[in-house]
Length: 168
Ligand code: FES
Image (cartoon, rainbow, N blue to C red; front, side, top):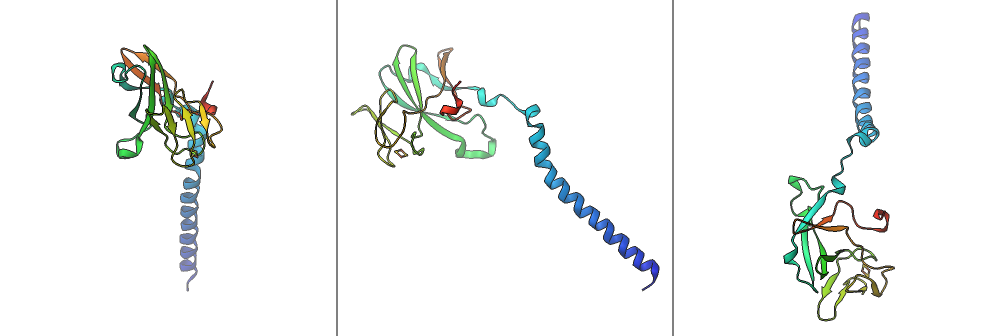
């Protein structure tokens, strides 16, 4: 093997090593740079208000299931960004909007108008009509979404799961 061939093989391997190291460095750096720039790219989508429909869709004194799409949804999410909440219209423009997730381990609770109770099918958690805990393993009442009435529509702030950590 001539000295020139050795040199060119060594040069080729050296350049290949640089290329592979560069690719690995870029793969490692992209999420780190994304994390560091995230405060600049942050949007307020999680604070956006979503309409659940006309307030006339929610009769006074009743609790009804309402569906909405996550504000973080993408066109390719399909049905996975559809979720629901329980809307209780107390009277007039007084509402309570509950997360469907049980405060124990998150199973979806159901409303039983006959007994006026929310019940969880997983471990028997029970909640009163106002969302407060009635019985079973849940440590607290149902989580509630912030809501407002605007232009005759019931709006909720659905960008964050309503948990204790999202309370101001
Ligand atoms: S998840 Fe509802 S009682 Fe356990």
